[in-house]
Image (tube, helix red, strand yellow):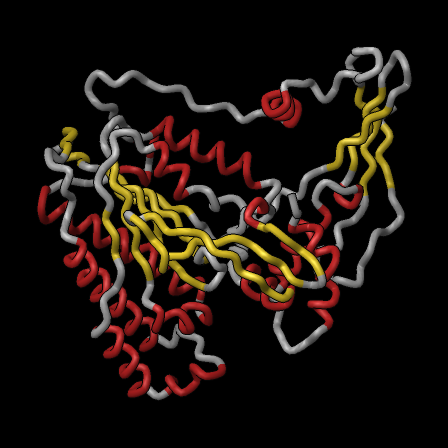
Length: 394
């Protein structure tokens, strides 16, 4: 498997020193942590065998939420936790997508417009349930900013309960039909654009570069008028009795990079080749696959535009699911235990079937000896490994 860290190790310094682009500090941090992950840079736990002096070095992981290696377990644990808390009713998968004409403005104002996308999409669903069924639904919203080809494509994957609380009692929709997607499209468009205009009028929008023309309100309203005339994509899927597949699908990039390393098929001469979905060849609603070849400069440009902003929550909970601990149980529903987080040792045993802290030579248990560590070159690409220090616990 070709690792993202390998590509970064080879070309990140060249990319940084090419000039002509602004690289935010949180992107520098993500790139440097991915390169340092599971290397001596982040520290090493040293274990020794008390019987035969066999030594084992265990490198620390970076735990960056954009790291493709660290995020898999966190993603799986998140999904298991959610599944242990969901009531045993059917759920719909609903997707809200920002139109293409709005994406340059969204890229220039990611925190503001992505927050609007979260709140307005949830408000549309909650308002429909309140008006139609006088019911409070449960909603889990997951933001994804990347399309399969890594272009900027902000959209919300939403898990929506097929029912909810009505007069303090559980109510479940009798039909598999949730709502006409055209109704959601119009409501979503109206609510989002109203809040976007309000943000503009309060001076909250950044309008750099080609967007500067919209500093004149007439030009901004011209865009708004155009957005009112296009269809906003909202997709509503039939309900599933078992939401596990939906939860794992929508949560697959909540704690890791938007590109799984298994999709990278080749890396040579500064060109990265990876697989992505081809919606032009979709059969029975399932897209085919195609390969994309990118020079490392464009590859990094596409990939790192999706690093989450510091402190920005990519998963949000609304309605009944805003407070899982206060959620009343369904009648006759048995309580389910929350999954426990595995230690590094337990995780390795679970993955490989072998205990990593047992001496391979004499089968004695290895004993922790010391931790060696060094500073992390978070921001400055010229910073390389300083002298290794260590904490000796012997």
